[in-house]
Amino acid sequence: MLSRKVFAGFVAGALLLGACGEQKETATEKAADLVADEEAQETTTTAASKVMAPLSGLPVDDDAARRPALSIKVDNSPSGRPQAGLEKADLIVEEKVEGGVTRFIAIFQSQESELVGPIRSLRTTDRPVVSAFRGVFAFSDGVAFTLNRLKGAPVVTVTEHDDASAFVNPKGRKRPFATFAATARLRKEAGSAAQPPAAAFPFLADGEAFAPAGATPAASARIDYGGRTSGSFDWDAATGTWQRSSNGRPHLLVDGTRLAFTNVVIQKVGYRRVGYNDSSRFPVEEAVVVGEGEAIVLSAGKQVKAKWSKPSNEAMTTFTDAAGAPIKLLAGPTMIALAPRSEPVSVT
Image 1: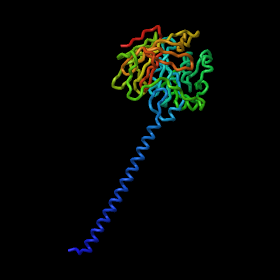
Image 2: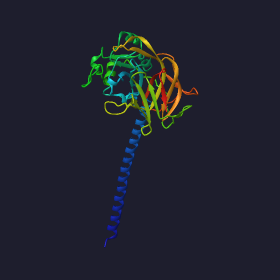
Image 3: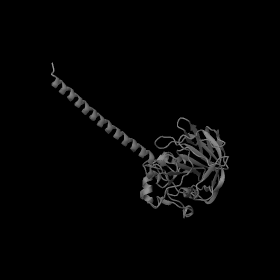
């Protein structure tokens, strides 16, 4: 049987141990709360550092947003496919060149790609297109006529002719379809002279629906460029993208992925001959992209008839709906197809 003194001492010790336990637990809880606060603060800081990419509307970090646009001329003839790196482009412009074939101007800003190509020569259509995005313009070379037309454009040029070390020639590719490059390498070659682009479009806020005036449902669209190239797009609700086909076949890249876009802008333009023939003796044409005309904008499984306007080489092209309001696009990659006004465009 315990004495009162021993019992009192036992109770006092137990109370002391309990108090120490409470103090230890409280300290542990405070440490856990501190870590949670730091993680929350870090998450908040990371989220706050994200800004809208000017050409895609997607959230990117500050460094990516401050990069200059990099426009690369990419072949799209049957012999030039499959291409590499196009899935990383924020924006692709498709233009008819000669002989019924098309080429792409793939514009990179928010993402880099380790390999892009095949890179080809410029055409006179390119001057007013790339001038709006400024930055860097990479192409293989060009005839004197087209090179002279590019003079004075607000871009830093990187060409295989002048900067051969910036380009690579993968095995299995034959010229003129063997010129490729990494986007980071091309930017490095251009130095720090180029500046970031302005926003290409107004973009919808996260969760905001695509609903411009006059929008109606659409499942597919087809563009005929005349001669040897047609481009079509099928709406895929599962991915929320318009999946590209060329000449009736899925347009696949070297890694097997299918070329797809969140938005497709079919810009109807006139084409005119520029006065010389290419090496295959086909007359070279250029798209008239300064001025105004009709367009069709595809997004979110819908189509809307639009008007396009571009007052100068350096101005961005704007697209407005039937009410005259600027059309806001969903954030994501976009294709602008410079469709010949003289050829049919069908949307179903």
